[in-house]
Length: 282
Length: 251
Image 1 (cartoon, each protein chain N blue to C red):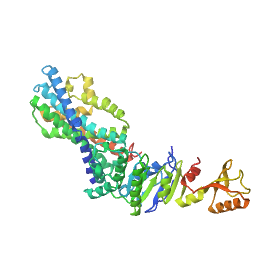
Image 2 (image 1 turned 60 degrees about the vertical axis):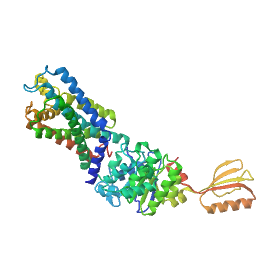
Image 3 (image 1 turned 90 degrees about the vertical axis):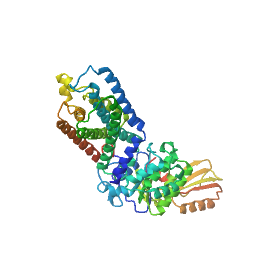
């Protein structure tokens, strides 16, 4: 089975990049290839210019990965886990940085608790901390907020945004489209192992989505012709899709001109959900 | 190299933190074997003219425990890590496959030696042991533990689940160790079984180790050491080739 085909993309240094797509689209496979957890049959991947196979030592030192699965080693405490992870990267006496990371992730009080005794949310924080022990310039987060409570989610985003501001490149995969919309400057959408769209978040929203206009009118029918595209109608309730704000102006002018009174009006700004659904064909 | 030392340290901590299971339990098992077999067979079985059966049995038990635990260490550690998924913590850092191999095998050697020393310390009180050629005994202990550690790593790489590993352990490792002359000298076997025993690498490890204690063996220790060393090299090459290709680890 082919998990990825012809995926070619370049994430720039310092970007906050989103990797989106339905289950099985190949997001995790792509990450695994970059992280050296899977070998691609063809093609190459580089991290900060270092080939992930030919120059794997440099590539892996540049990269911190927060895996999707909530994995942990039940033999160790949080601090032991983080010290071991530092040692794997050739860093000894890393406690000042480990303490700092634990502080930011609200883990300090759990430092000497065994991994087994932590809640799911806490384990997730340790995974984030583990990915950061070697201060990697590139950080990949594979669905970091799946099954995580609101409080942790906000804390996590706060921390990740800070890392990004400090110059770290962030690559994020998520199912929560509003998260990608909020944080990512650029987005690649994968579908069945291929890139279905690759653009800045703003461009994607402008190109694909348009506005959704919901109207309740004092009439049962729209004056004709009417700008935009009628999506649905239920008695005097209309849902229209508009391409631009210019169409909105035209629509309102048309109603005024026809003497139709607006009872209720709601305008949905463009969102990634709509882009996503259109691209993935659902 | 720091990745190697940390991984070795982690592997040592892993079994040491549960040393009641990983060291004390196999020592107790070996002591029970000694009590039961010595009681049942002492005076009935004569292996070498000048050696009492219980004396003969002790080095065999030491080596058997050492080998089985060296195997158990690398194999169970790797399979558990694969099953729980925490193997990624070792696969993501810049650790070479040589370092990976070295750390797992060396930790297994340490566990094997710890268990072997424990069995010896407990059983030595029941017998009168002479250590006639300690260098030979040490050489077989080290190479044997290395071979089983590497074999355990191989089994751990190939196995995806605990039951696959258990099958390997129960149907390969345990029969080979039991039929290696721990409890008897293969000279007491019918010719067919003697010849078959010569195809069992475990036989050479037990026989050579015993030579270190009594200065007598079924086969010359040089030959046995050569067989054990060749097996270690072959299994190590197989392991390194699989690790290099990423087989079932970086799939």
